[in-house]
Image 1 (cartoon, rainbow, N blue to C red):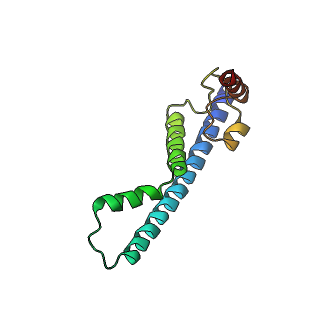
Image 2: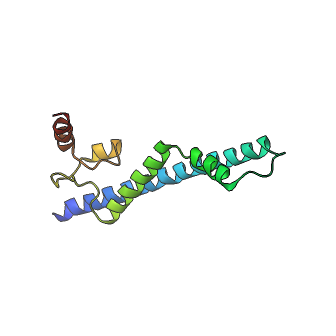
Image 3: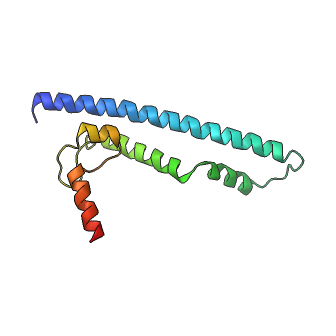
Length: 125
């Protein structure tokens, strides 16, 4: 890898790390706000019934986390691990660089467009 290409890759990794970290912080803030709203609503609804079981409270808390939010946090954490291990932005099928445009559009992308299309074609057949 040339010095210029390594420097460019380093800049991309730093930029994507910052972007993913910011996205995760916003998402975690939204999740925390949703939990707080849920807790306050459940307190208002059951002022007279103070004997709520801890299972019910846990159920309410876990229902606040939608599957989509959990998946997104997992994908962000995975992408941050790949950045730390310098594997982020490298196609898992062919090892070539995933384009910066693709990573900006899909920060969790693990495959180049060509490899993704090949995988989808193989899955159909």
